Amino acid sequence: MPLAPLPVPRRFEGRSVVVTGAGTGFGAEIAVRAAQEGARAVGIHYRSSAAGAEATAARVRAEGAEAVLLQADIVEWARVAAMADAAFEALGQVDVLINNVGDVAREQMSWRDITEESIDHVLAVDIKGTMACIHEFGQRMLEQGHGSIVNIGSTVIVRGSARAPQYAAAKYGLLGATKSYAHAFAPTVRVNIFAPGFMETEATLGRKDWQSGRGDQLRAMTPMGHIPGPAEVAGAALFLATDDAAHITGTYMVADGGYNMVGA
Image 1: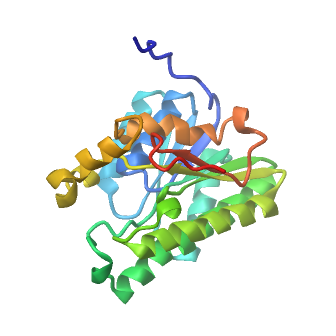
Image 2: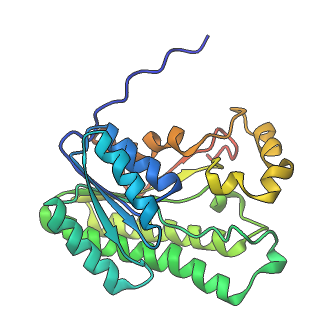
Image 3: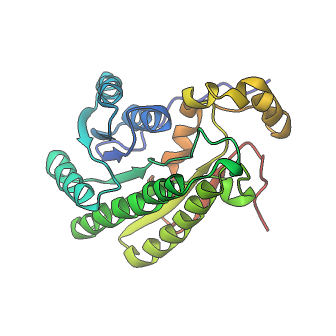
């Protein structure tokens, strides 16, 4: 018989957390989980989903945390810099940044459908945009004397993607950026990657391939026999920003139910 779950820990008591792409999906669940874990304030970034960001903010406030909305298109570096200024001003300081925004080329079902426009967009969002966030928030964290950055990666870098090679290339590039900034910011600011496997987000559940058997196939290939929803994985993503991870930087942590079995 499985053990009963323990109460949600209070790992972010009195701290501030900014989550990019927190209007929907995984980002929203990370933002809410941070509030549940005692964060005093949560910065909720969004690009166009203002209604989603407001909904996340309401959930964050219901958990007793302050919610601050931050709007920016992270592809534009100047807007990221302005967002970082706004976050530090509104929150007083930013203790944790979770870089969740990423484009997975979700509508592309085959490598044969790849376009130059899609390549440019995915690389701009997943590499340039995330680097801008690491750079702008990270240098301000250095000035305040502490901080932790967690970039949301993907296990796609382990197996590649015949469906969307540009997505795999972008996430592999993010690994290099993470290691580089981990060196640059040490020992004051830690920078890590959290790599979830497949998750049953609303967008994933709506995909035609998922509905036609892809989900069942992946569950059968996953040793844990389960594809989690984003709320189930949010706490693991935040682990890398906790004091328990104080000696971890530049690493790539996987939570995929054993699907890829990464290791030596």
